[in-house]
Image (cartoon, rainbow, N blue to C red; front, side, top):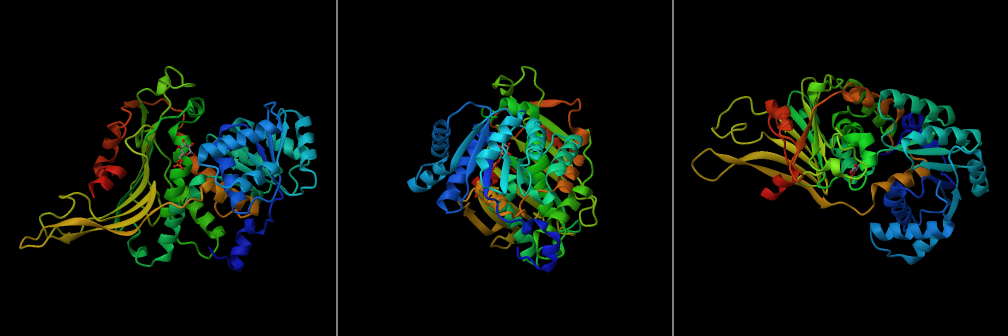
Length: 478
Ligand code: BG6
């Protein structure tokens, strides 16, 4: 988005200058391996990696071992197709081994940073270590003119998010805290914002007068993939609903930003979370795929949810009374993410086959992954004497997603000091406040078959307003 003078006032992020070093805490871990190194390699290919990259970890590795590990990671993510970019990345690497509780580690880091004056500290470490590292960065004088990049989930409930924000803000300014939700770096999700506000036809119908319900599905056809221990502490609500799915809701539900600039987008999104009604136990269905308890790192009697379906309301003028159904799960029938905004049926049933008799009412569908699509569904008459027809989809967009991964985009933005696609303290806390009442409470977790669309109790949750739209199955019908 373009910025005007008001945006300059509101979006303080735009004033940060580029970072001159990247420090990765947890450099030997899973996140660095899967996401950060491939992103750095892509940045090197695009000429955007011009700073030292200093890895920090407990592991007693040599620099040669780290370099080897980086190459393996890049190979794992795709193929090495640019040797000079790889050599460039490897030449930028340094390694500091040490305990995050030990001030000596931070002294060694200071030494490694040399002349760098504006480091970016990426906390690719378990959330339980965030406060230790943040406090030690502050104590070592490594937070001055620096920024910190933190992964979701930011906290594990409202109280811990508040505590974490407090610690982070005692050492870093809000505009120097980059909270990553990689969904915000996805092309198809950025398109929701564009599509809503670059068109005028949508606004008159985008409210409780015309919208009957909204549903969002994020399904994955694989299990926890060796992340059992992480998942046991997290569960589906914390892993993807409070962040990824809520961010999608915010973009769909927000009011138009009052001016050009992401400062306005941030504050409109935060208002959506603030207007969301807190969830009650009866609004949520928890599921667990059969076999989850046999995964490595998972308790034999675990009741952690690998599936979640929920019904929520946004108590705003625009959305009063419109149900929002969110659903996500591991080991489901497909890997896809999709939004379906179902419109109300015509006020009078003039034709025998009018919805809801024959399927869904008109809708707008946003496919978010694996491809990016926007389709508008409307009924048209079949040729012949009878007044019967079919609902057809008009595709406004249907394309494969571009190669730039969200991590490349977000890491480049954080290094450049552009906070547009990161989440803010007020929004994060308001989102936690919505799900807080249903976290860690006694609940029934329904077993579901891997490869299915989750437990049947989730169908009952939506039954009063229709049925779940299963992304792949609908597509295959075409
Ligand atoms: C991550 C979650 O944040 O998002 C994972 O921790 C999940 O459990 C992933 O699989 C989904 O992201 P994407 O980009 O693959 O849809």
